[in-house]
Structures are given as C-alpha cells and as structure tokens.
Image 1 (tube, one colour):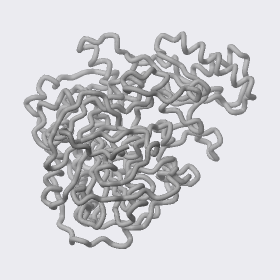
Image 2 (image 1 turned 90 degrees about the horizontal axis):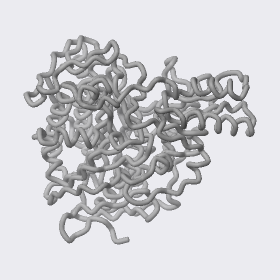
Image 3 (image 1 turned 30 degrees about the vertical axis):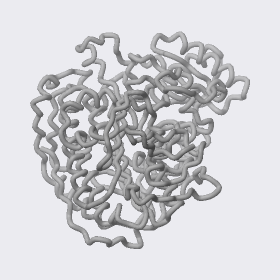
Length: 563
C-alpha cells in the first residue's frame, strides 16, 4: 500500500530566525559573477519554483509508462513536454547529474565529475573522495563522513536568487545527501536528506520543527511492519521471476519488517516521505508567499534504489511508477490548496539499464556483465609486469570496471607517461572497451556544439572532465556491457555509461494556465536553470551558464529574455 500523506497543520508564517542560518562552510567558494545578479520580478512571475528530479528516470521509462499515468504526471503532460532531454556528459551518475539541473552547467564546470574520484594527496588512508563530503573533517562515527557541498564549484539557481534577493528562500530535500546538496547549493535555508531512518541536515544547521515532526512520524511507521503494495493490473505482464546470480527479482511487492530502514528506502515509501517533508517545509516556511520568489528542490531517490536492486523492467519498477504518479498528484494538490502560484519542472539525474539476465529473455542476448578484465587492479598488474615496475601499493587506482583511472603518484613523469601509454594500448584491444581517452586528450578537446545526441564519445567525456578531479585516463565500456560482474542483493543493474539509455531523460515544465506542447527535439538538463531564471526575472548573463533558455510559450510570445 502507498504511504499516505500525514501533513500536520503548522502555524502559518512561523519562520524562525534559526532557519536562516547559512550552510556549513564550503571547501572552496563557488565561482560567481563579480556582482550579484539582478532580479526584476514581473507581476505575473511565479512565486515558487519547484524543481523535481526523479533519480534514474530514463526517457525510456517515461515513454513506457506515460500512457498509464493519471495523477501527477498527467498534470505535467499538459505542460511543456521534452521527451528527449539529455544529461549530455559521459559520467551519468547521481552526483554529476544533479549538479547540472539547478546550475545550468555541465560537470566540467561544476567540478562534480562522478560520485567518487581519487585524490592521492588526501590526508587519510582512503583516497576515494565522495562528491558530497568534506574530506578535511573527521566524522563522529567511524566509517562515516561529513556531508558538504564544498566540491560544487558553481552557484545553483537558489544561490543566485539569494544573492539577488536575500528575502528569497532556498530549500532542498531528498532521499540522498548528494542530490539535496547539488540541487540546493551553497546557500540553503533548509536542506534535508534521508539517512538511516530519518531526515538529517548539514552539521551546524539547527534542528527544524517540520523535519522533527516528520521524523517522529517515521519512527512510528518504521516500528511496525509494512504490508506489500498491490500490483496494478497493467503491471501483470512484468510480474515474473528473473534470476541474476543468487538473486531473484521481478516479483517483489515491497513488504518490509519492522525496523527495516533499507527496505523502506528501496520502496515507493521513501518518495512519499520525501514529498511529505517538502509539504511540511512549504507550510511552515510559507514558501511562495513571501516578498520574493522562493526555490524548492526535491529529489526523489526510490526510483534509483529500486532500479539497482530489481532492474528497470520488472513488477517492482512498475509498482514504483504507479506509486510515484499518485504521490506526485498529492503533492501538486497540496500546493494548489496553499494558493501558491508555482512553476514545476521534473527531470532526472540520469537514466538506467536493465539487468542483462532479463534483457537476454527479451531478445537482447548480446548484453552481458563485465568480466573484470578492465578493472584498474587487473590492468595495473598487467602493466607493472610488462614495464617491470615494482612499487608500493597499486600501480593504477580506480573504482569499478571503468571510469577514471589514476597512475600512482610515486612514479616520475616519464614512467607515468609509459604506464598511461601501455594501459591505453591494452584496454583498446579489450573487446569490452569502447574507448580510452587520456587527460591530455580531453583537456585539448573543444567544447561540443550542436545536438547532444550527435556528440562523439570523446565530446561526452570532455563534458565530464575537470582536471583537478579527473584521472590520468578514462575508460568507457561498450553499450552492451553492464559493469556489475557479480550481482548481489540490492545491486543487479546500474547506470553511469556514456550511452543514451543513461543520458536521455524527460524534461517536463508545468504552470497553471500555460498552453501545453510537446517538443521531440533534444534539449539538455543544463537548459533548466536558465529557463527558470527567465521566468522569475533573474538576470543570467551570456556565458554565466552552459545551458540556454527554453521558450515555454507555445505561441508567438517568448518567455526568454532577448539576447
């Protein structure tokens, strides 16, 4: 069953001064214009910008289920529909994808190249850096980290709006810290994400009454078992078991035992709780009713957890799609009841790829799991033997079966170049590898132009390249290779490739009274922020963002400023 809304009426206008405390200090200040952007709010401008990201919601999933939507998505389908939006870069992961949506910039400008990268100069034994951590600080709990937005190098729309108008509020909530922080940015009034059964915020942020009420309700809900969800009749054809290693998926219903926070997270319940907290924050802070426009960013993470755990084509994802549609409908009904003039955009941080075992049953026998031959550890050992290199620690560092690879910094420059050359030659001969690009090649690649669907692999990789974080070379696997050699519970399918099943996402805009249209030609997620900025009258100079403003007036009018 769907987690029902449990909004508690809060006192209108009870915005405590503590809610205005700025975010924790960043590792580095974001790149911003020398002067604060101007804000010219037109009388008919929306008072609240609602940006929603559905994690791992590919354009393919949207197309597959759009005819079954009758609640929240049905409303969005009456607005401006861009079914071929693109997360144009190569590293289609949660953190870089979310970093594009509200900044208008590709990862090579945001600095968020992946969920993790290697920093061999990090003052700790573990050199893997998480995109939303402050690695210079030690967490209170061993093995944990201090969440931070410090690695984001550019301002978000909410940051820019608060620079132009300190009276504006910038709020973000998500099932993941990296999603909330990358969409909210450096100057958030409230930022919350799910962690171990409750919503938490940045260190140094005061406790909030809305989040406290939500967490108290969640504690009670988690203390009891939750029954299975019903299977919509139109999901029946997807309801059959598929075995991936020792894991069987395809028939799940999301029943969970008392205290099962992981099961709660990997179910439609997480999205319902996230939207419920968003409602409470809107009510308590009176968002959309202040003297200047406000921004509310909501990232819904259940889709991604379900996609990884069960794949994208089974009964589990079908139940999730139906539940998401219903919960979005409730959320929009709540906003309507508040009398707020709001504009909403919905998109995704990336797409996804179903598990190969089910794809083989569905006429795609060429899809298979990676065989580990491309991993940094394997390639490093082979290169060390070939070049006769003996060194403490791994010769090549990396995570997974592809992505950014780093040569051990102990090597002198000439030997490092030899390692890169030898590793590149080996990998280019591997039948699982589509391309290998060195850091020098990507640094010398001009910024791509034209439609993102026509970009070469090198151009896609270039938009994910940021020299201080990127590796000495980048490995991209072929389209039919799933980089999960050994499936396990919670992780049978994934994303992260440079291929369009991971790059293509829907982009949907809606505002009450707008005339709807559908534009099938490709646009980019970096176009969202400049489009929203134009609607609320926020001045964005040419070159401030990678994206362009999309005209949401289907007639002769234009919602974008004259350039």
